[in-house]
Length: 244
Image (tube, rainbow, N blue to C red; front, top):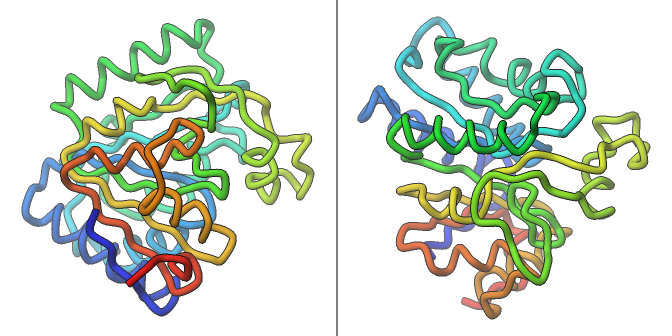
C-alpha cells in the first residue's frame, strides 16, 4: 500500500480531487467507483467547484456507487442516490444514463445485485475506486463477519454502521435501515486502482489494522492488502497509530 499523509481533511480532499480530475482528463471515459457518507464530502465539494462551468468534461465518465439502503426510493432525501445528486451529479456534466446505482426498492433485491454486477462488467470494470472506511473496518457495507460476500449482495447492517449514518436520519440510528445493497469485496478488488480515504481519530484503529494488521474478514478493509495498486490517504488524526 502507498500511504499518503495530510495535515487535515481539506488538504486530503484537494489532493484527491486533483487525482480524480487528472484521471478524467487522461481518460475521458473513466469508470469511477464512488462512496457516500461524511468522509467524501470535501472531495465532492472540490470536484463540483473545479468542474463548474464545464471546465471539466464529465459527459463520458461512468460512475458506480458502492451501496444503497434497502427500502428507500431514489427520491427519498435519505437515500444515497439523493445524496450523490445533491453533492456531485447535479453540479457536473455527467450524462444521467452514465450514473450506475443500486435500486433499494427493486422487487427482487438479489436480481438487482446481479444486474449491477453485469452493468459494471459491461462498462469494462472500474478504473478508479474511491473508498471510505468505517470505524469497525467495513468498506461499502461489507461488515465484519466470519465470511464475506464476494459480489454485490444484500447486507445486514451492524449497529455501528447504522449509528455512523444516524446524522442523515435526524440523529436517530434506529431509523437507519437494517439492510443495504453493497458491492462485494471481489467487486471492489477488481478495480484497477483503489484509493481509500480516512479522516478523524475515530478511524485510527481501523486504519492501523487495515495496514499493519493481519488480513481478516473481521476487518474487511484489511483485504485491500492483496491488491497491487492501493493508495491510502489519511489526515493526521486517522494516521496517528501508523508506524514511520
